[in-house]
Image (cartoon, rainbow, N blue to C red; front, side, top):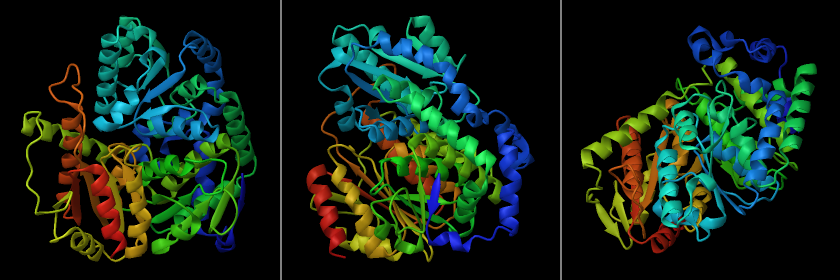
Length: 511
């Protein structure tokens, strides 16, 4: 990797932090589970095979080639997965300009795009380590029913990527489905170079051998000469007390910031000492709130890191592991993700699987306001005023990230108006990313939820609830998890999505 930027002048290679990083680096290469302390060693012992993936995943290529031939007649690929299993293939598709539909939502409006209008030529890849993730299991059930209703055999249109011997593996093999197993000793957010990242990428024609070769070459380079990777890890530990803003602008790796955001946020966002990465539009906007800025091309950022996509994958995974060692946190667990799942289940049980009618504090045109404020503008102004000194804003949109994409403009607007670091996450996928940081990182977040009425709904075969009910249970469940911490919290519900989004953006701009 090539690095540049003014921050390089601040590096003290004789410091205690740099010494810790230098000690951890070869221990990671040896897959030493005690690198992050004895408390983390049990989990680390079964999560370190990502270190070997640039080389070990080469053995998967013949099997992946055969699977690609088997499903060669399918011209449309849909990937059902959450977190690392979907964000990795997404950035690969964007980088190599390939088409794949990433189905990482429970929003019925977005599900309609996933189902599409050409099931006969659709191949669905279901990616899950165990099969228990509620979003992915629901998506799987939905597609099986859709194929059957269209007179198509799901066995001809569905492929599973899962851990060997997992409940999902046993079930789908017994049913006759095609399955490719991933290395079970790799965690989801470190899995891009495993079967989870490679299988869907190969099916859309991405050069997975090239990606692995680039990753292997980069790994060999930083094991021979550790200065570049240690310099980057040092800067992210010392120059960023909390916020790191990443931008894809002008680079050849679009979407990489979203992948890194999930990797670093979920790995370090615990024990109240994490690093919150924020995917931003450009370097200028990235500087809001004093964030340390990172880009992948050009100049102007505090740090620019340039290299091919495969090199980026192993480089940032290794940097994340190094940050964990320096901060003395376990980068492989995600304790607060489970909390959100439990709150979702509790809401479904409480509601008897039907969304209740919730009464807002007030309504402004198309937007119901659940929080302080007598109007939309007043509510947003009050919300911004309540952000703690040194704190951040997290926007969480439980919407359709295709038709409702305009709402993403709110990130830059609120960042400018508040002068605070501001993240934006599509829900529920952010629950497997920054959602861990929201509850486990520094306790200074302010949270804006945006939900909306749906124009369609889907029953989930085998479940007592629909997609719409699940979506709202996830929103309200996470709302409750945040509320128990007494964080500033505002929910805006769109009675009409298109009109409501325009109204929110107009109110924010007028602040």
